[in-house]
Image (cartoon, rainbow, N blue to C red; front, side, top):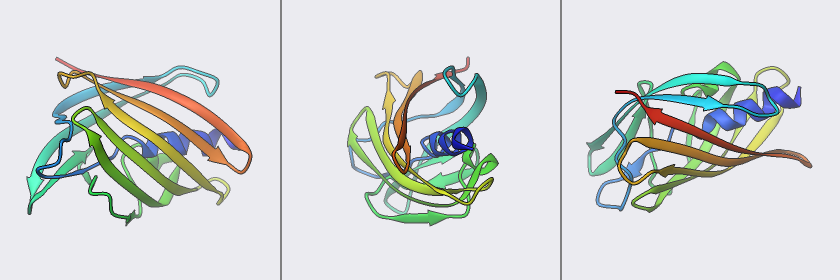
Amino acid sequence: MFISIIVSALSLSFTPVAAAGDACPRWNGSFSCEYKGSLGDRVFNLEMKTVDQRGQTVYVANEKEVFPDGQPHHTDSLPILDQFANNVDYVASCTSPQTVAVNGTATVKKNGMRAQLNGNLVDDGNGQEVRAIFTASVGFFKMNFNVPCVKQK
């Protein structure tokens, strides 16, 4: 039960978007992501592009838009997370040219509980790797994640 909650919270981290003109990472291409840890191995693909849309930089991840504009957003589902959770509320913002901070909650499909997510997406400096570094929480239960997503050639 808690494993599903944590995995679903982790997945939320891979769908941010940013405001144009802000110092934001530029991610474009296919990425292979791999989690190895106490929840078991998990491998997934992430198609990501950075576009400017009406004055905003937007990350389009697996054909879904996420806005790192520092404003609250709601969506029914986000890429990868949609396997585990829905009803997602998040705030994403660029904190440096290499970092997008993401905070949010999602309802776990399996048990209806809300999971809290706090963390960062960090660029390696040349757009070849996106690393998700997050803490997922449900009540007093917390788990840390470090998931690399490497650009495919």
